[in-house]
Structures are given as structure tokens and as C-alpha cells.
Image 1 (tube, rainbow, N blue to C red):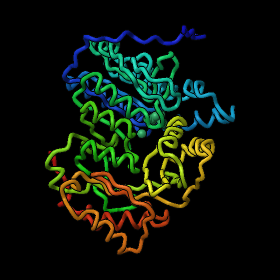
Image 2: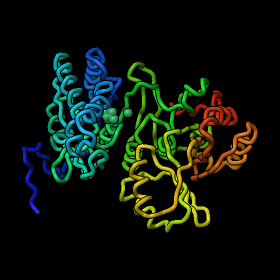
Image 3: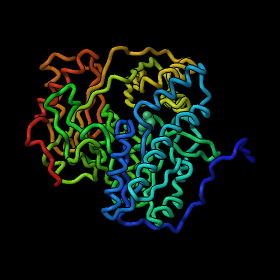
Image 4: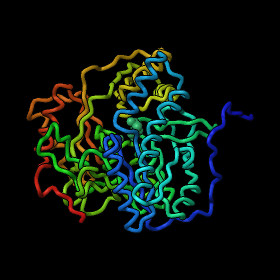
Length: 420
Ligand code: ASP
Ligand code: MG
């Protein structure tokens, strides 16, 4: 079936099969706070120029300035109660383009050559799911050509062009994924994620003042941390990094210190501290389904685009959790199935994550003992080889995080994993 676009779309270069990874390529990603305002854009430009002067082939991925994406989403809802998904993507992809164009101007003023590209121009091809598109291909020919001309390449994050030539976005926080996908496709040495925090912490420092910055975590740990509430990186970006073995360095834009490295697991991670951190999540909805055929249930949820997290089967019944933002989709899928279900309100999830759990017995005993010691009743527990997650009353989340952090001595210097 031929599809004709009503307007010209930005065409995607052909797949360049003979592109070989180039040493010395780095991908630097800057989040919304890092580019919020002309002054900050100029400092980003300086950092990129410095990386270029160090002899690197520099690709930068930028987020939209400050709250731009939120503002654009709000604007759409002021105009329309249910914004058309395709048009919403056209609208919200603009923020990243603004940052890139401005940064390119600033770089040119510093006497280096820069070129800004939309996701589409950069060859980021996605599936057709507006608002949460997945990258299916990166056709990096044009980027390579620019790098060969010694240009600094700025790529608009969070967006691509679909296989049916529409502009798509990758889901909130998606610029991280753009950066890692590009790093993988370009064979980059590393992907640096510049953000407004100093790295990945043993717990949210707002809840645990003694929380420490982790020097290194494994991909697996970071996946579990991101999935269980650590907000610092988008989950998909970590999956991508692991699958393509891209070293990630999460660090602060506003400091020169090292941040947290996310790497292949190594012995030092297992020996030094068996627990990497304690996370929490209060943005999940928990559903209890009285009786349903699991295959049919999860089929329906998946078709509705619900991102199911935890699943617990108890006899006939099934308990599952999903992000609160998927609630509408989850509820309509459940109703359509005619399942008898209810939402378990007022729960939050507290998880401990650590690769060392695989080889050190007694972690579960200590964790359950800690909860018992502070009189917190967990309603559901789910585990993976490197995670134990407790669903506890939301009002108990904070003290549960604090107690676990203390019990596993995560504030101690001895828990430091030094990979320097
Ligand atoms: N600007 C987008 C957002 O706010 C994407 C990103 O920043 O990663 O979600
Ligand atoms: Mg982000």
C-alpha cells in the first residue's frame, strides 16, 4: 500500500551498511535543566567545544529547554481535550529542535563548526507508536559525513521518524534513549549523560540525607534501579546501553567531578557492596484481578499499551502493577475483559537492588527483619535475582527506605565501589 504524505517529510538517508565505528567518538547528552536559558546553552557549547578540542568526534543530544515539553503538552490540552497523537508529536518534538539550533549558533560563535539535526534528519527511525515510539533503526550516514567534515553534530533528542514517515516521540525522558542509540550506532567510546544531579545515589538524598553517590553500577543493577523508581535515567536507555555494551557516565552539568559509571558487572561490584541502593516508587498503581486467564489478561494489557511491572500470581488471582499514567488504558482493558478487579490504593514500592545478592545469602533475612523491626507490614513482595521489592503502605515508604539504607550500611565509606 502506498502512503502519500500530505506535506513534504524530512527524508531519511539510506542505510549505510559500510559505516565502520570510529574511535574517538563521544556522545554527550544534556537534559532540560542543563539547557534552560541562553547562559546555560552557552556553557553547553563550551563543553562541546572542549571535547572537540580534545580530539573527539563529538555528537551532542539535547533535551528541550527547561519545562518546554510540559508547556507544549499543556498548550495542546488547552486547544483540544484529546490531542491527536500524531499532531501532539509534531508539536512536542519542537522543543529539542530549539535547543539544538541555539547551541549550534553558540558553537559557531566559538569558532567551531556545528550543525543541528532533527531526529529525522539524524536518521533515527522508529515504529509508529506516537508518544512512545521505539527506535528500530539508526541510519547514521549523515552524522558520519558531518563528523568527517569536523563538525560538531547536535541531534534533537526524544524523537525520530516512523516507518510511515511521521514524526514520533520516544516517551518522556526519551532523549537519554536517543543518546544511547546514537552511541551504539556510531560505535562511540562512551555516552555521557549530563544532568542536574551528580550521579546515581544509594537512595534519594531528599529522603536519606546520608545517601552516597555510587561510583559504578552494573547495567543489570541500573535496569532494576530505573525500573523501581530511580528517576535519573529512562529505563529504555539502560536496556539499549546493556544490549549494545555502551559505557554510560551519568554526571552533573554544574560540576566537573566524576558521576556514576554504568558498566558491565565486575568483581569489585560484587565484593565491595552487595547492595547498590534502595529505591522507592509512589507512582505505580496496583491492581488485584480476582480470576482471569493470565495469557488473555496480559495480552489485553499489552495491546492497550500498558507497561506492566510486577506480576504476582496467587492461586486464581493475579496482582500486577503498572505506571499510574497507564491507568486509563489499564482500566479500560480490564473492563473490556469483563474481569472482576479492584485497585489496591495507598501502596508504595520500596526496593533494594544489588548484584551481590546473587552470591551473598542473608539479604532477604536482613531486609525482612528490618521491616519487622520498624513495624512495617509489606502487602506484596516481588523479587528478581538482584532485587527485593516490598509493597508497603504509602505513608511508610519514607521510613522503610531510611531503615533499609541504614541496615545495609549504605552510607558507610566501606560501601564505596572504587573503579578509579
Ligand atoms: N523533553 C522531553 C521530556 O521532557 C524529553 C527529554 O527531556 O528527555 O520528556
Ligand atoms: Mg531526563
